[in-house]
Length: 291
Image (tube, rainbow, N blue to C red):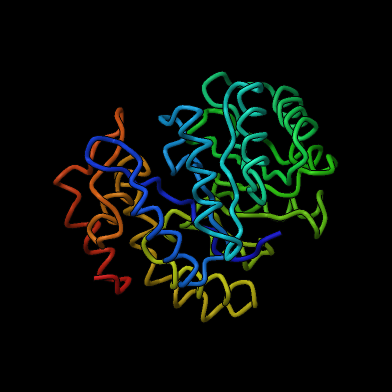
């Protein structure tokens, strides 16, 4: 699979909430130029929860078209309905996505057996490489390492995005799943150490604003160059922290608009970044050399 900095791409919108195709093109070209390893299209950072199914599939298809084989595209296709997740994953396969990323079902809080059966059902229904995504802080559902290890035995489940920030899980999942199972951090703040402990990369919010620096940090960490990786990551630490001052993707979309990468657009129930946080996010961007 893919190694390094993978961007959890924002879905750019205009002030009315419509998809902004010109900015989408700009963002895809930026990540190709700056060394990003792959793009996640319409993941949770891409506001998948507020795009309808036609829009969801349409944005994935558009990113695949814009990427034009220059960079792999991983489609966000998770849902809290197994049937819906299958339909979205099937759509991603049909439009040419290279892989799918499936967040654990949110709100309905399935058991570990329910998680296993859910992901196995999607994998058996659609022949595309699939990456599990565990982010209990947003889903109220924690997919435990032992469940990941069971699912790794399913042929086309090829990796996991682990966003708990618990670095002990790198060892547990690696030992249980083997070297060929891809381990991605879903927590920018601990991603550097995650890779130094044996992870394969990060699916990153910060990479939306600082793709080159995230690429450099990941390259150093994957090479085992601890000193260089930490030095680059120190410049990024304020972004890792302050891009979560309000619910993701509120701060990162504000930052992207400040950099001229997209318009000032987001969908309700999310709102634009509160004025009180502008200075902090701007200062974090400045420390990373973006302003």
